[in-house]
Image (cartoon, rainbow, N blue to C red; front, side, top):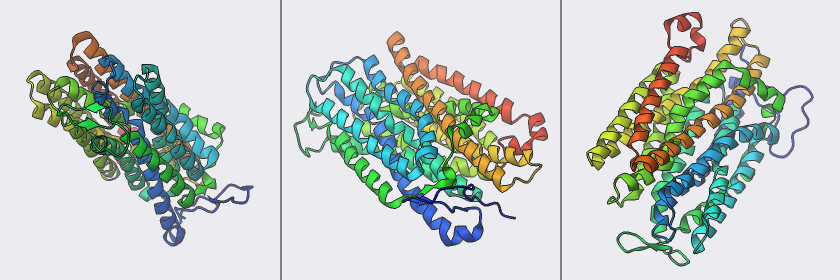
Length: 469
């Protein structure tokens, strides 16, 4: 018999925007009602999350222009401006996940999109006001962290809309659409910076052309307002997603929550850390190179291949794909070191593309395996066949775990930024940091193999081995 998700007994009458009868695993319900509703919510969830990523990483495209704007900030201070949003966004992913269960997915998407007005408005003020102190830029960076939390709440929300057989693809599309927000701001940011839309320029670039930094935050401010309005008009809340904090806490007692959190530091932490730092690293390693927009290609390819990692996890096995990705990331890091030492920008850039592609694939393979692990645990605990209540409990544990794992993983991006900052301060080069990252990938590779690929473990619990699910 097909498991269905129905609201618990005693559920209050649905309010505006709330759906009380939601049964995605019922094929008849899915074909007649569920699929269309889920797709509509996915579209607007992706937009809000996409803009959140753009605002979260906005400083990555602003910092390379600050010196020419008259701000005498040190390289260390510039790295902190890219690291602070990363750190704040990582911590916010935990309460953002819980917020879906408390407020509802639609309601929280409206709120989280509207919150993006704060960092964009504050950053616009900073770059339009000559002599803005460094501490105010830091405050703007702190509020930019709001955008980092959007991923966790969006993923937790969308995980309820889709049946198990489609959840991997839906989460992959949701994650990739959000991740592309990094590439969008890094590609379109330099273009709008050069457009004299209104206001005075903040300086001139190497070619003597004026630029307008305020265009970037103001454009994304308008887009954030649009996303909030569309979430209000087109999205839904699900009563089945209502979960008390007490019901979410057990996720922290699960062994797999912590293991996958550490592995996600190496996968998503690498993706977001390099995304934040790549434009500034290019500026430091190859100061004569002026086409800073090319940095957007890294986050773009990393985002586009993320669903491929999920696809491989669905059809082959998650753990081997992640292991292969860690090997490729180590090779990419060593290639980047070789490119810097030989002053070869093509080699350096190609190596970073390997880093982005392999981290994107690993993001998909690890994140897709998380729901499968908890579903498999529920089935094993029930003797091989989970009841409707078991499925619902597993989904709630999964939603809570996804937020925690995404938060820990995002913290890895902060570590990467700090690694670059410390290496540059102490040696005048980012090369020592890259060697440290190679060592970290070796550690993640061993951890992944030890926990999920050993023959003994696979033989004892193949459904939990984060392998073929």
